[in-house]
Amino acid sequence: MTTTLPDQQPTTTSPEAAPPSPWRQPRAVWAVAFACVIAFMGIGLVDPILKEIAAQLEATPSQVSLLFTSYMAVMGVAMLVTGVVSSRIGAKRTLLAGLALIIVFAALAGTSGSVGAVIGFRAGWGLGNALFIATALSTIVTASTGSLASAIILFEAALGLGIASGPLLGGLLGEISWRGPFFGVSVLMTVALLATAWLLPATPPSGRRTGLADPFRALRHPALLLLAVVAVFYNLGFFTLMAAGPFALPSLDIMAIGWTFFGWGLLLAVASVVVAPLLQRRLGTVTAMTACLALFALDLALMALFATHEPVVVVGIVVAGAFLGVVNTLVTEAVMGAAPVERPVASAAYSFVRFTGGAVGPFVALKLAEHVDVAAPFWFGAGAVALGVVVAVAGGGVVRRALRASEGAPAPHSEREAAAIAVGDAD
Image 1 (cartoon, rainbow, N blue to C red):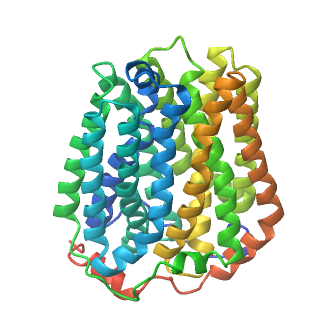
Image 2 (cartoon, rainbow, N blue to C red):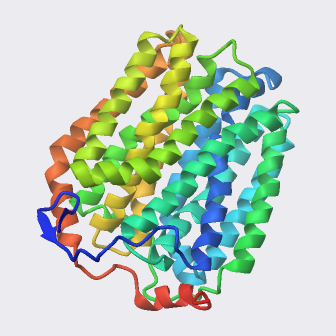
């Protein structure tokens, strides 16, 4: 039979050949994936309580938006040191250090008495997330069975479940107190830390020790740099939606906003796992990614046009999850597949650019809402994502060539690292 690999010419495979299931994985992979679900809850957890925090702490919408900005800015810069740390103390210790930092700073945010304190503790939370997320992605990719695509699907499924459940948990606990979601994350992260410590085998440092300059050197590769720039514009739209969405729904209470973003996260999870592979096989990685970016920009533009009609905004938020799920999966897979460097280094370089670049989005968006009108943030997000579409179209050939070149090339992580992670998982 004939199959078509993403952005490649058709190749012939055996009729008996079947892609391995992403759900048949070693114990280590499931331990990290579970922790990922809990970690990604933190992204959408604050959405339902943004208005409540603003009211209780007497803060403006743009001040509250800094909960996202401080979190992402610190996370982006900290991505530069994740490879340095993990290559010296091992993946497991790095994961545990990241989880411990999240536990501490989430609890401290819950005890805060001012919006400035919450913003500061969210920054510390971002440091923990940087250590955990970048290491988790490379650990799952390295330790998983099957293809890179299967590993990315599993990682994106964890991301989607975490993002979907975060707003719902935030809504449930936020109805008790705005402090509740922060304490809830701290407790759940403690469970994730214990699970990771117990289930993930020891992962001593192996292979080359990376340095602070390695992510910057990695960005010399045109495909990686181009994907990172696309991700900056995409993240501007992503976090504009998350920060501005609740303030565009003034009549909705905490729980209603939680359900809205739960629907958004649920569609994101389904699209990541089910829709993204289908579109990739039919259209190719770059084409499918670009098309969904364009649809996301259009969705934001429609929300801007009907920003005063809350049902339209609710539907626009939920539908956006489908486009974001596809883009998340395909961009992540393209980065990990196209960059001819170690995967932790590729992840650190890409994440540094996209998070630091996208960190300004929530603040700018809600400043526009304060000084222009409720539609302005969505116009800003739509314009940013549209620029990402232009960059993706202009540089699509570069990414396609890099993906073709990577097919059949040796995996850019060391075999010793893979063996270390897999120890004890055969049973």
